[in-house]
Image 1 (cartoon, rainbow, N blue to C red):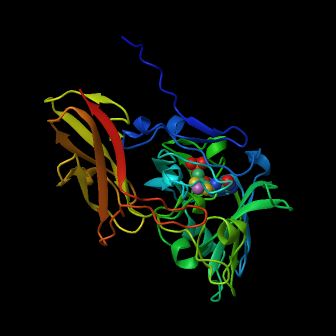
Image 2 (image 1 turned 135 degrees about the vertical axis):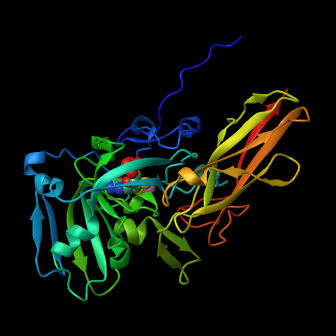
Length: 354
Ligand SMILES: Nc1nc2c(c(=O)[nH]1)N[C@H]1C(S)=C(S)[C@@H](COP(=O)(O)O)O[C@H]1N2
Ligand SMILES: [Mo]
């Protein structure tokens, strides 16, 4: 008999700066504990002292402002449960690695309850000018990335419409507790429905801009889908999360008993619409799984499950495929793009029937 190994809460992809993902079995609950919530950081965690921290709002506004942490806490707060997925999640599923990119498995995703101030309240008070098209968010972190010559700050933009959406918020809490340093203390943006890169951590400056599309490093070079060859290249910043599923149970390589019922279960999400169905293939065609939609908010993943009685010994492939309310379906093969973002091919894992 083998000893049961302690399951690590996070699997480290890079030590410094810390980048880590959840072991998939840690993603079985609908709310992901902070200790198992993936961390994706491009630079070292900036040390932010609350007393000196300010959030400035400027650019194309008539009333530029500077908020202290207390100013922020005095504003009306709301709670939103939302799934955050890194656009690179699942990249290890591509046969040929993209050079220099982290090879995430399937655990760079999590679902948390975020508490904070709706961004539109903060923007509204600054009186945005008519011409403002995008809102740029700057984090307090910066550094020189490998292959780059100059130091960069972490900055990313949102179209004004998404910034003004009532659910986009400046969060100060995650699962009811103050944000941890790794997850953006003291305040971070949370953009429900969008890939995690939009949710700028350690937020300290907001800038409204007009004119040409804002294209800094993190939405002009990286975190863009780049397709096509030299000269005919198309690049488009990643935005909404693509429809996707995750099989959390059983686990890859598990043994299951012939003739005994097991529950096959997981999660599914989509940034564009709610998940409307999940189909599972256990070797004899696609069958519709049951969805726990009643307990999930509009930006949360939904739980799904199906009962399976294995009838054949040996290795068995399990596949899951989610569909959202707009008819988006997970493709069989991932869509290729230069930095391998947005992996959302049909999920698969193998178990042994014994
Ligand atoms: N300031 C700052 N914000 C950031 C990042 C970063 O490196 N710096 N990483 C982004 C990316 S790519 C993702 S996926 C999410 C990850 O959030 P988490 O570490 O809280 O899970 O934060 C985003 N916000
Ligand atoms: Mo990310």
